[in-house]
Length: 364
Image (cartoon, rainbow, N blue to C red; front, side, top):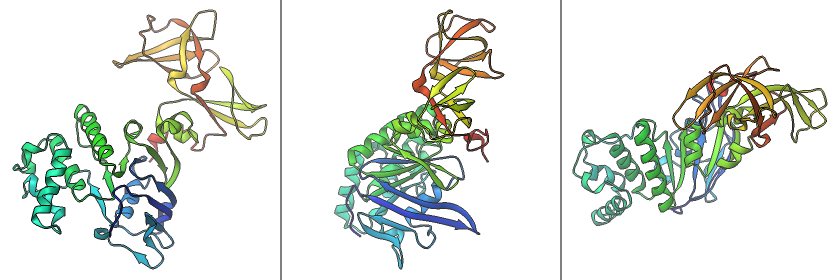
């Protein structure tokens, strides 16, 4: 099957049941060509199942459709086998062949090409990915984690797939190495113009890598948006809290605003007056201001994290603490009284708490 190097992938009503239990429910999504799409969510939300269905190693329920550049891969009476989809797959554990050298691993998916074309394609991918040239005669067991990851990426790109699928590709790397290899991988994919879909459970990784973030929850799409939009304009309390920490305050809806013990905040919601509403307040929305302004509070905890301080504050009208992040050292001690100020741009208001007060990262 021939496909463009940067392919458009469309999913229409993709569902999957296992033993009668829904794992994916009516997933419809357009994957932009030449961009990186991150499937984000907690374990068991269906993101890896969706990746397997796109690759062809798993079949969706009847009625599901998948199209690449308008050509049907999956649909009524049609199922294109994985080897004919022109889709590459980069596994979490890299899946390098231990008995083959790096050069032989890179050439493995090119066996259909004449030998000179194989050598040329391997040379092209080696030139594209930094740090591969001196590894070609080595075996996987002698490579570091970062080197194995680079080889796995090169092997996946060597056949010039129309779409590259990556399942948690950086999760086996240490933190410092993970960030560097991630940056190298993103740069390589952008230079190649490859349409890529990456599974991750880490919202910070999705924000750093993705052009489009698809947040999944219980087999459905909770929100699909750009990194800035999904962080700045989450569609639900679940999305807000998954993308970053929030302080949660329940309030009463009145005349287009949520009324809470620490303030009243406007929002564009269609709620009757008197209904319960939820304010999700980012830690960076809180700051300490002059004594004569703001809300009377007291510092009850401080944690230094290197880049910032986490400060836990007890606000007098509340029976709960609020957490703020400060990139400036606060010369105050636990027990000191402070005046708390709020930045309304970092406060998100929703009709109600759709998951009963449970943190999305703590759900089973």
